Image (cartoon, rainbow, N blue to C red; front, side):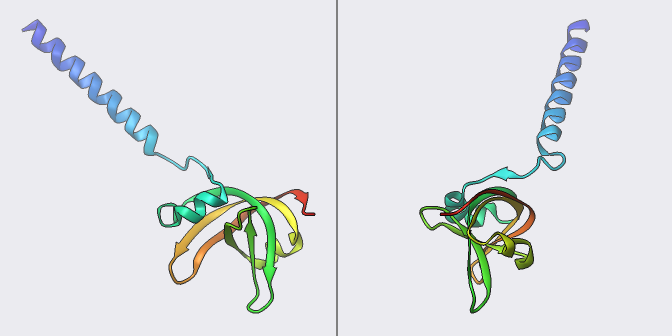
Length: 121
């Protein structure tokens, strides 16, 4: 009978540990995910709804007005709000924000933070 009780106790401890590990892995906001523009371009659907950090050079187009960042391979993500990124036109920046993707609107990042890395040549 004593052996049976020990087995139940060990099983209960194992279950509690597994539950604690599962909750630790799922619980809370783990922060933004470091994601190169190439990955945002190729895995857009899977990353939609994620908070990401990425970097590139700020570019824009007047008609219709929009701003984006791009890497040397021309992978691009549109940035919002425009007034937060407009002062950084031509600069290499590191941005953090909420990433979204839709087939109608493309890849978009709503900015939470912008850090200037360098002025583009």
